Amino acid sequence: MSQANQTTASTAVDVARTLSTKRIKHNRVTEVMGELDTLIYPNSQDSILLVCGPTGAGKTTLSRVMVDSALEKGVSQMQANGGVIPAVYVEAPSSGENNFSWKLFYHRILTQLGDNLNVPKMLYGVDEQTGRVVRPKGMNGNSLAALRTAVERGLRERQVQFLVIDEAAHIIRQTRGNQRLEIQLDTLKSLANQCGTQIVLVGSYDLYQLVSLSAQLARRTHVLHFERYRDDRPEDVKAFESCVALFEKTLPNLWEKGQLRRYTKELLENTLGCVGTLSSVLIRAAKLAEAAGSWSVSSLERALLNEAQRNRILEEIIDGETAIGPSFTRMMPKTKRAVV
Ligand SMILES: Nc1ncnc2c1ncn2[C@@H]1O[C@H](COP(=O)(O)OP(=O)(O)OP(=O)(O)O)[C@@H](O)[C@H]1O
Ligand SMILES: [Mg+2]
Image (cartoon, rainbow, N blue to C red; front, top):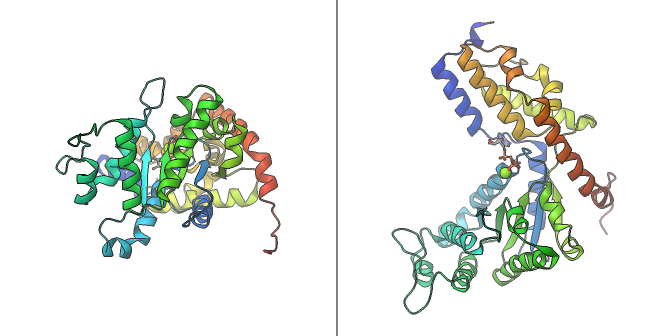
């Protein structure tokens, strides 16, 4: 073990922090973001887009990157008009109740919309000091209808181009029967249409499976597949190896050049080609190295998913890929088609 691999307790804490805050730019993110960029534009017919992928693929990270990047791009627009917010990220609440709590959900959106601008807060009955929704005089500001109106106006006034709803399966899972399912999605669709805001629903494959329970919904929503890197596709193996190399580069004091990369095959197999899972494994490995006082391959071995965990995730992935796969192969042929 060389000097470069020696790690003290204090540096290893930084190591874990550095790893967890560093975002690796990888092919899948670029692909999905590119497709979303193309599909998000004023007056688009696709008012609801679905981004589905395996657990640990990095969907939440992608969602945040997308919103951050829209805010960066919209900076001049925001400078010209302090009220503009081009994109909003919100996580659908899991309230523990049988039915999805639209109130809680609208509150969350209002919190994201509520800062910095006095006018809408007054109109919408959001307390300027606390940012909490208050009951305006003469009406029940906390009623579902008032919250919905506030959200609609907020999205419109803020000129929100797209709203990302992470963990979107919560909205549909807490629903009984196909009819209710359609009502939930219709509620979102009408929100989108009222405000000119496109909605991007993000979730694991269960979201896709829930949506495809209804033929009507399946037909009306465009699905983007945030796939894992597969070990049976050479281009995926190569892309995954680049991810490993990027993580390795993040911590030159812990990992010498090539030290992680040589385990690409094992890491791909263990993490099932999911970059988020890879990140979690590497953070754990760094922490274990911290406890051991120095880096060794045994820290990495102990950080890997165990067989039971891996099998459970693999089952879900296979089910999801099987469900989502056929339409995708039909819709996205490998050969380029001429644009007519
Ligand atoms: N591109 C990336 N670069 C660095 N770290 C990443 C990247 N993508 C994901 N991660 C990290 O991996 C972990 C899991 O990622 P994330 O939460 O985005 O996955 P997910 O697909 O949303 O998972 P879940 O289905 O469980 O919600 C997070 O700690 C995140 O910081
Ligand atoms: Mg997530």
